[in-house]
Image (cartoon, rainbow, N blue to C red; front, top):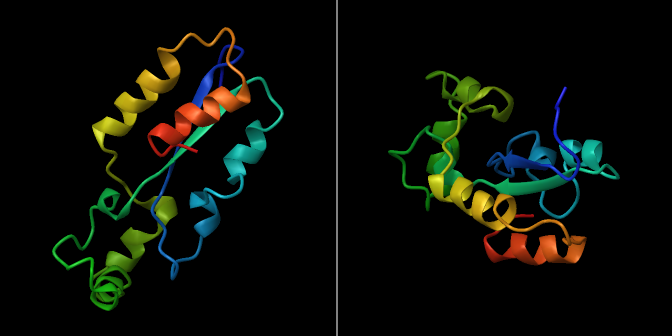
Length: 129
């Protein structure tokens, strides 16, 4: 279980999931993720951040502007990369800036009078949802 104080914050890092890979619902920013649904209607604040392609430490030698080559590398069964690429079991890199922005925008602010609209405006400043 998660033990947080009332009005505590949860930062959900949303994995980069390209259109051709199963599991895009875990990275959605236009509707709640499964974790977002769990914390809806609670006294906790749930914030998400969508990670980009650079968060996946696989096939970085391939030009990411060439989607066909990149997809071929990431989905390669022979090299074993496809197995490592599945979002549920892979590692990912998070830029330190994301954590710093989260702390600055949410944890260090006076939350005593925060309302949903205030949180949304702060979130949008640095691409949080």
